[in-house]
Length: 371
Image (tube, rainbow, N blue to C red; front, side, top):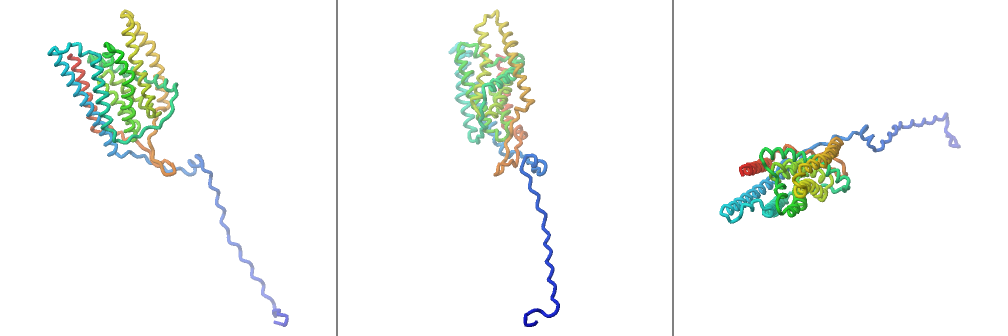
């Protein structure tokens, strides 16, 4: 170096700059969440379908079947005991034979056996099962009227089947006997007020609330068959079961007891009052004509419109009842329920209840034929 601090000789060239590191391409933006993208780009995993716990389902239906069986045996035993006691009094001429057909006595026995023994015992026996009532929804008057129309073809189709059995076995329904007696106005209190309230509380509210968590349709079918068997005669068995299915659907869809009570009231009203009016107030010479007008005019019209509505509701899948699902913490469906029909239909207590009740009904039919 010289005195000016400059380097001697040629200077070194500067080092070239390092090339820039290659940058990664930017990530594409994620698509917005929508049903279309979810289905096309990100299909959700299949939702598993599970059956209810078979042991718990069987235990619940066995408890219900056992309760129904027990109260049916108790009711039949008390009825036979009281009937035997009345027959003994008649044999010893303590009472006249007309007491056997006395409307007040029959209604008194009905009130004792059904409303003070049968219904309370069922409630006591199955009350420990948890209740899961359906969601409550509003029903307009127009929809109520449509459901009433749909009850008519079910009612008269069941009555036609039951009527065929009645002709074969010469059996009449309890309603006919009550309307033919002297205490007909008291009978209407039972038919139009007590029966709709108490029967809907037991067979719709109690049974369906206790069983619907194991499947909506099994609960409706079992409660409807029990409702039909409860009536105790072949003439009412079928139409009560058919109408009970529709009432169960209404209760499941709308969740309000007053809807099915009012529909039950309308069914009993139109099923009993016209026959009573014709029998009591139409001269005997005109009764055949009045019955023809009633059946071919009013009843046929209601049944026709009701049948059209039934077919429309079935085709339009308006009777489809959603089964319960399992949800995650964020509300997503993680599993769907499938009714355990095999477990329900193979429940021993329900099978025994059906067989015993039908045997009792058959025995009562044979006794009425012999009498």
